[in-house]
Image (cartoon, rainbow, N blue to C red; front, side, top):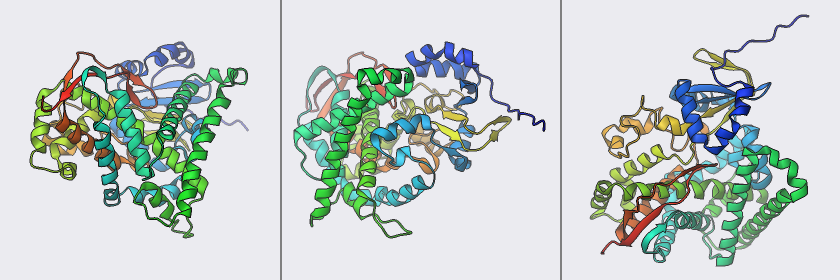
Length: 445
């Protein structure tokens, strides 16, 4: 029988030859390359990973909503982003799909409701206050590694409200940093894998991942053996029960989720806060409005501070930590004239969407007021600071609280001035600044 091959109408874009030819350009500066391509192809284009594997990259808000929300059941996280990560960080929420993901999401979600998180606010505020006591004052201070360390401390202490030694904290931070850097290179430069048997690089990283699991498994076992009550995230995870069976998670599952919460939770927040401090250093008027808005209010009340929320939202618009994401089609699909086969990878380009001049007035300007003047913009189809749909970031409320507490505490203690340095964007798993050099002095002069 003569079976005709089904024809699809993919967006115009790059052939396999062109994709291969431009791969170095993409790897050198992915944001610049994708942005230029978006301009050339009107916001959506295709590329090839192989003869039978296609990519579609888009900053079309309707297309992104269709993939992440309206028809989300037809889309999973792709193996490109999950398969390797699972080997190092386990099968937690971020790297799972299907029924298992849904079951875990339903189990863990309640622990991150705003009301539940209130019990963690004291831990977060204490961590910030202790850290700021050691914060350096002077000229041309790189605040990125400092804020990164603080964010790591906060997520660790929120997970385990116990005193971990400085040696363990340093070891945990170093291993996470090294594993993330390894995964970035592994995914972006897959040819490196041919040399692993000779260099031993992969085995070294797997041993580090095993060490992480040993540390966290030990903490979980100690907690289970204790009769003391804790008001931390680990306690919430241990007490969570599956609706259908009434059973709790196994130790392995709990450690998987702990690893994912740390992996996804500390660098994204650190990046956003670092970009925020940079932008504040070049926008004195915003700093003045923020500090005035804090007058006569305590730190807990800042969570309802409209101008503070608008400022954080504007930073996440200009520098979204999750600057890109991906989904793979489970079955053939179509959208507004485009049609594509199953296994097509769709890549929403949040960075481009958030700076699209057709959607945003003065799109490159840091202007927090836009989120107050037009309150609908924060819920619009054109704004995805934490993703969208069922896989929206589970820790969004936690992150907003952490960032709010940090900013009010920091601005009450310090003044910041620009050094004239403009941070370079490093488009890795998250959108990281290379460094953020600021002049810092006490608020009282």
